[in-house]
Image (cartoon, rainbow, N blue to C red; front, side):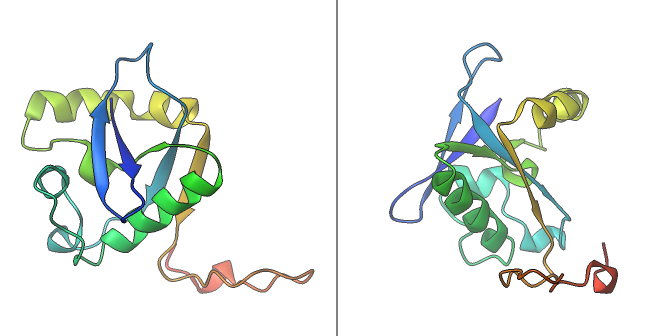
Length: 130
């Protein structure tokens, strides 16, 4: 399993772990945007992709993981090498377990405000596409 680490300079690094040696991690549940907008495995390896719209949710996940005391996090768009069909197939089979075993699961809803909630329900989930 590959996990991301968000650095102090807002850079991403990736590390690979065996099932029995992986550290606690957060995982991101999100809706994919247009393929060209998402940060890919290749983008992380080549240290590109910061200007893609999909980087916002990765940055958000990395920062939240740090606030929660977690060094590592997982995002499907860039932790899976989709060019490797065997790896993609294994990842699809493993995803439920990866989500279940995560220390935290964050949900990124791009069209829902992140304003702090008061005692009344300030957000309107019915207005979301989700």
